[in-house]
Picture 1 (cartoon, rainbow over the protein chains, first blue to last red):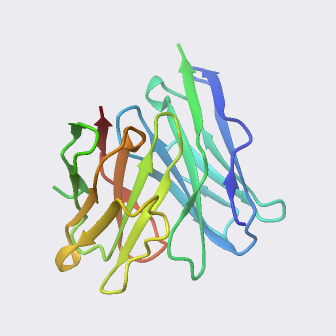
Picture 2: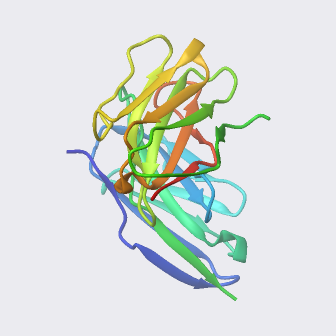
Length: 112
Length: 113
């Protein structure tokens, strides 16, 4: 069945460095992707999304890259800060589907 | 407030008791979702409402779980005869359209003793 997974369950980076969180998806029909951030004790928070007609989208300090050829999604966070420490989830949707499919999440830890 | 709200924020109950969890979606959002998240785990889909259509209950783990959405807005998730394995964070989300960006509430942390 369709699934969204992550290459790395945990990631530690030094404060100020850039981080990259990866996500693989298996449904080639997926056309909409979202990254969520979940801090401890809180609900997931929308970060950035991208549609399949794009391969890159930038936000404030974050960039999402989509490689449809290899069905790979990544989230880049520039100049990481302690507040970036959280679990990051990717999610996918394909046209006609009624709900998003979430990955298992990657825990990002920013070391001072 | 402009976001999704949930109540209570925390609930401690005894095994065998029934609990009701409430979700107030963002005003105007027609789609509403319930998820369960166990400690350190991902999101487990439970149920989905879209407008006046029949809900998608495919994720409910047992017949002890049910949910309703009154007037197309507020939703209540009910767990009957709670078990210890029901302990988790129950998250609600809403979206303006099916399959589009979901906005989450803070969750209800349920502990069954």
